[in-house]
Length: 126
Length: 133
Image (cartoon, rainbow over all chains, first blue to last red; front, top):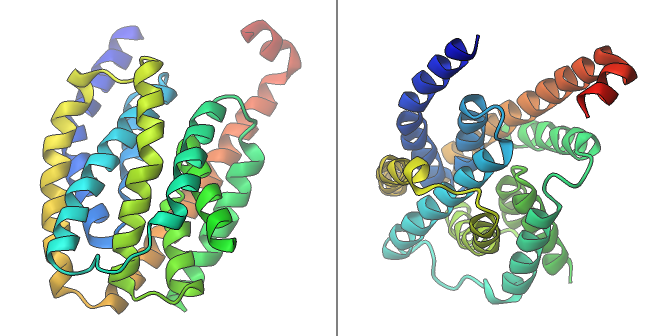
């Protein structure tokens, strides 16, 4: 049983670079969404290490975002953007969220989030 | 004030590992009325800042092993470069639709996976759960 799980994980790990390629592509193209691809893929491979999977996903998407920011800037998509007013809330919110990771019952959050995602998705398509 | 609150809660969700980038982007395009590509740029900047504190915290807790994430940075970085360059050839309405499909898929997946996990936990019963603890 343990051998089968280890085999499955190795096979999954071999596919992760492909998932990263897709995640980076989506992130660069849409300015978001890379985290979804990475989190789903990493959670599937590291089933019993959710926090590690989350950490890898976050650092990957942070790097993808960094590269995309440079190219967006070169292409003139980042000009007079006002990041300063939201800089502090972004830093504090990110730190607090990481602190709460694994400490909060996530059922309610997940249900609310999925409802919002479905609603927003329909709104954008219709 | 509204902008600060939205930014705070979006960043909070980012730290929790819940896909929040989409919400901030939606806020920027639908509420603030920013042009699609400009909003995407701001969203990338926002995510970069919000995830920085999260990454530091993960490093301190020992969740990050370089051998696992470094190869992914290379492949994903390549994808990010292609995606950002490809953006010049796609109209904002197309990226809006792709984004809509992505949100729908993400919402459906979150809902279904959470409900199935909840069902499994419930079927295990209180005795089994207490033994697991």
